[in-house]
Length: 250
Image (tube, rainbow, N blue to C red; front, side, top):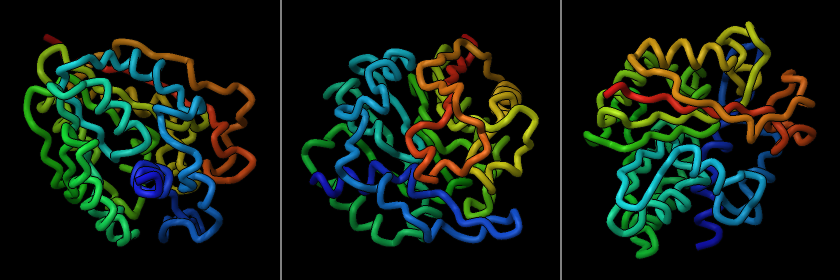
């Protein structure tokens, strides 16, 4: 189970990419052992992820229905937070499984584990994702930028954000946590560095009808020069990250 949790919950980090000439070719063949190492744990037991603070920022509570898109290291924490009367809809994109076929068996094993009785896992292609209605929250951690990279299609980002908007109940929240790029870097930086300009996220998400409700500096790192790919050992786990909460108007 520890290996399963470390592998599946590290999906978000596994989806980095090797770049040639600025064009994304495939997932990285360089060292990705550190982010996939089960010893890194998840949001419940590794303080690096600041799980309690992030959950408080999302506002998740017992009985909530939450979608964890690009199911990652917070799935277990979300499942515990919503409790047996709540539900977590964990989305593992088919594009990721095509790249890492071993994930399919891991996902199937996790779905049968009694510890995840309140977690429902789906594996759609990202543009075919279907979320249940009247969700309390949708969370995407360190993977919003991946919607813009080549191995994800790239995704139809405006359509993706509209789906999230439609799935949330009035007053529901859409929380985005990601690696910050240099302001004005442009969306192509997602392919090169796996980062995104926070201003681009705000523009895209609010265009779907959301209102920016709050932002938090709890994962910010002013010492990050924003010029390194996030899986490089020198910056791994130390990137400057932004945390935004958008709300669907009532």
